[in-house]
Length: 207
Image (cartoon, rainbow, N blue to C red; front, side):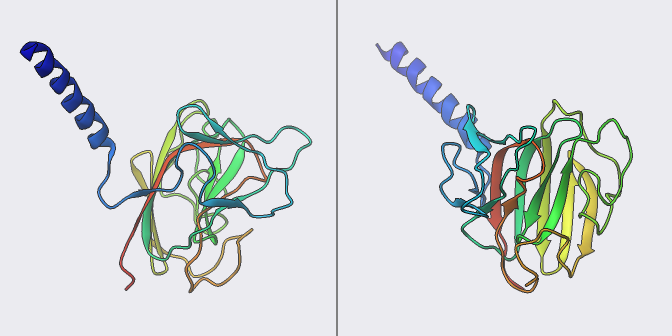
């Protein structure tokens, strides 16, 4: 019995260690992996193209002839670091908006092999990534984006593609143009199919 108890205890400790390793101090989940608690459709009357898939995946599916709807957090943020993973099919198009105004472009452009102001990871229509870091459409990609004041830093798949870039204007399709106020995170849903997982955010002190 003692040996069994120790084995069970060891297993429990191992499980705690595994799950504990996934916890990042100071970060809170943006998506609970179960439902859309904390989120709302940008247009309440729009077509809800979002579904929760097994494994805690939030997927937007835009079929031919359909028009999806953007998804917006109910909470607003000022200074923060946000981390997320996304998978975008080749040639599909979406976006991840900081404060609802500054779009980090999501584009299935791996086959193109070059950066642009409209390419994957771009601060859309404002600045191209410093290096090309896209992955193929069947792979998960990782992003860490930090916004402090009017400065944006972004890592895509482990590579720094924007380093404290000053952006004092909205970049298109924004919630509003109040760039000096807190704003939500929003996921572009009206363009193309995309999936997200492991979205989490750490709020930073306001300077």
